[in-house]
Image (tube, rainbow, N blue to C red; front, side):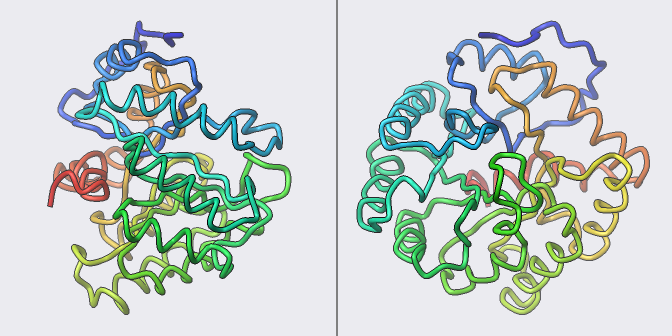
Length: 293
C-alpha cells in the first residue's frame, strides 16, 4: 500500500537526506518505496523488517521472524542502492543462545540484510546472555540500531532501555551501534555515554567512535531544540543521524513532514550551517552503514 504520494510540504531541495529510522509495515513493494523516496526527496533509508504487533505487546515468534526476514530480503535485493534493511531481532524468540545466533546469521549472511534493530524488552543490553549474539554481529560486521529511552513498543520495556546499559558494548570493539530517540527523557545520560566512547575510547577521533546518536523523535517539540543544542555543543554534528520513525517505508508524507520539522529546529532555531546539515541528514548515516568513509 502506498502512502500519500502527493506530498503536502514545500521541500528544502538543497538537503540530501538518508533517513536512519523507518519501520516497514509488511505491505510495501520495491516500486512503492521508490516512488515514496522520490516524492519526499529522500536519497535512501534504513528500514527495519516488520515486527508483527509491535505496539500491542506481542512477542514475535520464530515463524513470524522468518517471514519478516524473507519479506525484507526480497525488497533489499531490488533496492540496494537506496535501502539498508535491518533485521528486527527479538532475543525472546528462544532462550537457546545458539539457536538465536543461527537465526541471526541466517538473516545477515544468507538473506543479506544490512544490520540489526533491537528493542530491549524484559532483557538488558548488558546481560551476558547477549554475548554470543554480539560476537556474531561483530564477526559479520553489521551495525546495530538500539531503541533507547521510554518505549511505546512493548508494555514493560522502558527500564531496559536506559542509555548507560549500552556502555556494556565497550567489550565488543568491532561493533558500531546507534542509540535511538536521543534516549529521551535520558538525553544527558545518552550524551555522556556517547562522550565516553568518543573521548575515553576513541580519544576524540570521530572516525574511530563506535556510537552514533539517532535523533529520531522521542523528544517532544518542547524539549527537542534543547536536546539537539546540547548534542551539538557537546558532541558536535559528526555522531548525529537524522531519522523519522515513520511507519511504512513508502509513507512519503511522513518522510517529508519530518525533514521539514527537523530543519526548522536545526537550521531555523539553532542556526546549523550547511555542513552540519549535510553531516546529520546524510553523511553520518552513510558512514554508519559504511557506504562512505
